[in-house]
Amino acid sequence: MKIPSFLKKLWPSSKKEDISPTATLHFEVDKEGTVWVDCAWDEKLGSHIIFADLAYKVMYSHLVEETLVFLKDECEKEGMDAQFFEVFEHMTTLEEFFSMQKALVAEP
Image (cartoon, rainbow, N blue to C red; front, side, top):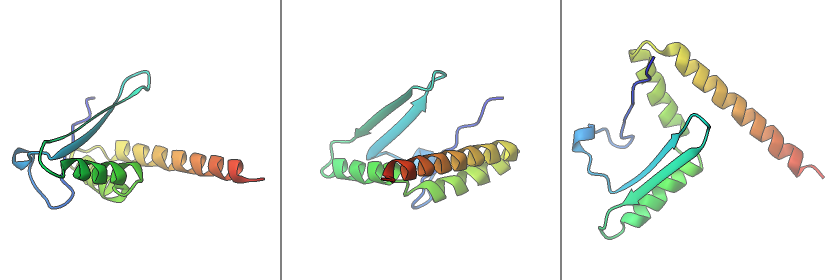
C-alpha cells in the first residue's frame, strides 16, 4: 500500500497551489536508512533568515505537536489509523530510548 503524501502549511492555512516557498527544508530516507536532506531559500532579502527559523523549528522539535495532529487527522481521513498509531508508538519508543541513553551518559 502506498502511503499518500500529506502537505499542510501550519500557519496560516493555505493550499499547495498558493505557496511560493521562500525557504524549504526537505528530508527523505532510502531503504538502507540513509537520510537525505535538501534545502533552499530564494534570493529575496532575509530569506536565509526565514530558512534559519524553519531549520531551528524542525531541528529543535518545535513543530512536533502540530505535525502529529495534522498527520493523525489525515490518516483518519484515509482510513490509516493503525499506521498512524504505529508511527506514534515508534516515535515514543525512540524518544524514551534516547532520553534514557542521554541520562546514562550524563551519570558520573
